[in-house]
Amino acid sequence: MKTTLVRALAAATLFLTLAAQGVHAADAGDIADGQNLFLNKGGCQGCHGWAGDGRKTDNQQPDGANLRETQLDRELIIMTIKCGRPGRSMPAYDRFAYSQNDGRCYGMKTGDLKNNPLPDAPATLQLREIERIADFLFAKVIKQGALDRAKCTAFWGSEVEACREFK
Image (tube, rainbow, N blue to C red; front, side, top):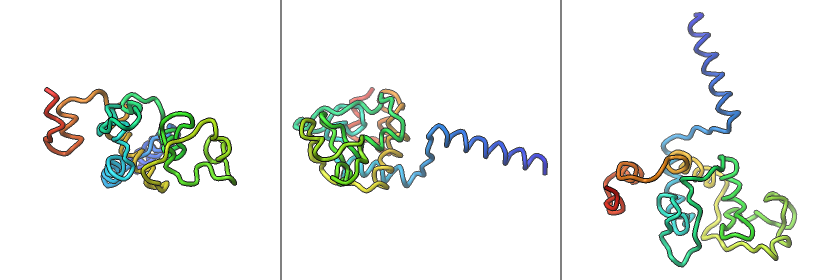
């Protein structure tokens, strides 16, 4: 009984520590959904590359940040996807990001964007979709190091053409 109580307390302490650090545990389904949203609906690979390394897949798109090296935490990644980066090339995926009646994004409203316009996002995303993209990024991209053949194959789930460039 005492061992069970000690284990339960240790698990609760670990959970509270991770929660305090902003660590979010996502399941495999959430991560797969996030990857699909990143690659398809969000069109993120056009600027950030399929692996989030900043090697864009569409030369007509602006250069995106190398997400593998970002220092942003989960909360800031979510905010950046929702609100974009005014004056930069990152669009806002929340269609209400700068509505006239609330300043949910950096305390700014539509009128504040006149000198710092945002590009149009390829799609709007719901908060749960944005959170799934963040789940994917933290599981497979952010702080995962430079790509190699093993990481490429793990990313795609099998050997694909894109992985052949890695020795």
